[in-house]
Image 1 (cartoon, rainbow, N blue to C red):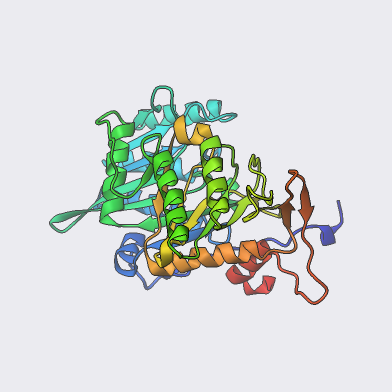
Image 2 (cartoon, rainbow, N blue to C red; image 1 turned 45 degrees about the vertical axis):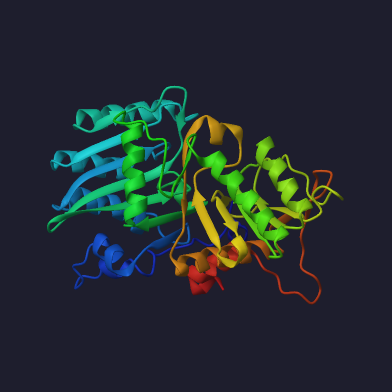
Amino acid sequence: LPLPELKDKALDVISHPGIKFCEAEDDDRTIFDIIRHEGDFLLHHPYHSFTGTVEKFITQAAQDPDVLAIKQTLYRTSGDSPIVHALIAAAENGKQVAVLVELKARFDEANNIVWARKLENAGVHVVYGLRNLKTHTKTALVVRQEGDRIRRYFHIGTGNYNSKTARFYSDLGLLSCSEDLGADLTDLFNYLTGYSRQHEYRKLLVAPVNMRDRFVQLLEREIEHQQSGYASHIILKMNSLVDPELISWLYKASQAGIKIDMVVRGICCLRPGVEGVSENIRVMSVIGRYLEHSRIFYFSNGGQEEIFIGSADWMPRNLDARVEVITPIEEPKLIQELKQILDITLADNRQAWDMQPDGTYIQRSPQPDEPELSCQRRFMAQARPEFA
């Protein structure tokens, strides 16, 4: 329709500010040099370019002569995927490449079979998941020779390795070379490719191994802190909340007096604001230009804050019947970045809908003396000042 006023202005995003410098002609650093020297990076798509961060991570790994191996999971990828082409190039360059392709990704079965065959024909070690489990985790591991040592770089995300959906899904990712998390991911890929059966992880929450128990422990710990005199706070952001056990623990936390803020885009089987049950729980949903797809889990932990991101919603299928990964965010700078994302989202008064005790929703609107705040618009303005 010839109605330009009804169309959204295109968001011409940039790479992460800390990563874009390696794009300069006079800068010969790789993305691995930047991660190693600058520390972990939190990616927030679509406000940070997927092409300039995640795709760059894989494509540079494919061409880097010091990279020995690349391991990655693929759940849904785009029709002409630059990442798959990079993995094929890596195998052709003599690197060890292992890819888990999930053939049971609903509506993408045929596409994934095509890509799996192309990867196999190029010499990639392709595996098709574990029996009775759907592999939903979003993880990539790069093993690099650096002098006389091996260093592991990795990406853990909340969204698929899909350059098309990355433009209109809101997702998060971590780029890091943490030794403990890298070792955990190595164990995970050994598990996925059939080399070992891993039952313990150093720091990662992995479904169906330890994730459910760890979330119960985190909720139980917040209740203990509250009962010991600390003002506990839980903030959760996910796509769906269905799991009866975790909902029961949230009710217990509310009844202990803990403030709980939740951003649940889709199905939510918990009822907030019910006297004597959930009066300390607030549930909201944000419906805007971008599909809210990230998962964030924040626990105040008596002042020693812990925050996690990853691929899993709180549903029985995610916790018990899928391979999922949730990672802790450990660098203080990144913790503050995530808290800012949560604070801005919770303050939205333009595209937020509040769930009522009966399960209905009421859209928020700013008070007469209150400025309008759309969280997605704010994130766009942070990425590109012209959206301010």
